[in-house]
Amino acid sequence: MTVWETLLLSNFALDPWLQGSLLHRIVGSLRNWRSGSAIMQYADWIGATLVALVLGFSPFVSTTLIGVLLAACGGFWILLTLSDDPSQEQQPLATPIHGVVFLFAVISLVATALSPVKMAALKGLIKLGLYLLFFAFTARLTRNQRIRSSLITIYLLTSLPVAVYGIRQYFFGARSLATWVDPSSASADVTRVYSYLGNPNLLAGYLLPAVIWGLAAVWIWKGFFPKMLAILTFAVNSACLVLTYSRGGWIGFVVALTAFGLLAVYWWSAKLSPFWQRFALPLTFGVLVALFAIAVFFVPPVRDRVSSIFAGRSDSSNNFRINVWMGALRMIEAYPIVGIGPGNSAFNKIYPLFMTPKYSALSAYSVLLETAVETGFIGLSVFLWFLAVTFSQGWKQLQRLREMASPEGWWLMGALAIAIGMMAHGAVDTVWYRPQVNTLWWFTVAIISSYSASRGNR
Image (tube, rainbow, N blue to C red):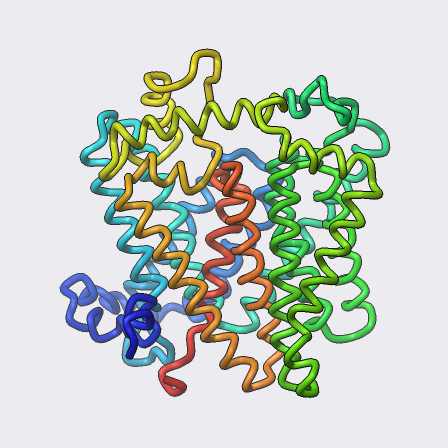
């Protein structure tokens, strides 16, 4: 085993460690009760219903209600874990992704304990804990192929009315709820849609997974009408995402589509001639770049928004972010080891001490900077490790599914492309931390984790 494989936990199994863990001994303590319960015979589908409620309600309800649903998911996951019969499990109890996520949770706990604003950081830790429990719960449930496909389908169907309402705003007008465009720019009069989410950047972050999984559904859903529905989902969500005029959302959109296109070519390459096996990837990449370049050069609103990305401080939005980033770097310099603790409450307490005057902010406007602010360089290192392990595990399982010619590989390719796109968007924005998007992030990571091979395939 190479050093790189060791670092990425490519062949690391957590089960032996779990079997020797004192905490693991409580797993199964309620299995006798569960075996005698008529309702708990359908435990996985009851759990899937809870996850479906999170996915189905999140664009339309308050963050408080989303938090209640996440707490219900976490509580039911604990109940399932306590009532499991480990001897009956046919799949790993935990994957390497679970291990690194747990380590990040520990670092966040330490950051909270050492935070200069402990009570504010505790609020952020509780929110983070709900998301991580949601990940563990969903990763467990989506090992079932039917549940996995059903939950992705529910999210895709939920995204349709969200996108349709956004497109309606573009044609019939929408009142700006904030200053989203530089008033001196050429695109100052452009209508930026926000649908039910109240913010165009947030809407773009919410729709990104729907665009990619809608495209993947074209190859998974059987029958003429389901495939037409998949194409409609992809087209409507793509159109609405573009109409948000979110530059960060566009970056994520382009990166995710490119990643999905390259993964799709890899998936098909085994059936191609030697010539196409060699040149299919670079040609696909070139065609995608050409299509995006055509959109930039020949669609004036797109050209204006893209050019503003490179306008530096002359664009007010850029100038604002640059000033916030500088303040975040000063915070990291002051708290470099484990940061100030998780959550926006802790950030709001500390940031005013380091901000550039007149540039208040609710977050660092960059996921990586925010991670470093909250958990220091230790937490940032673990988070980057988590990303590397997640993509490594996903790639490993994609190779396995490709050898099996399993159409389920399309959901996995979609999840990998979505994760890459969401990180690209997150590099310049922090809508990633809003519950409507963060639940989708952990849902996506859970989908990747769910593909881990069963013990029999190891």
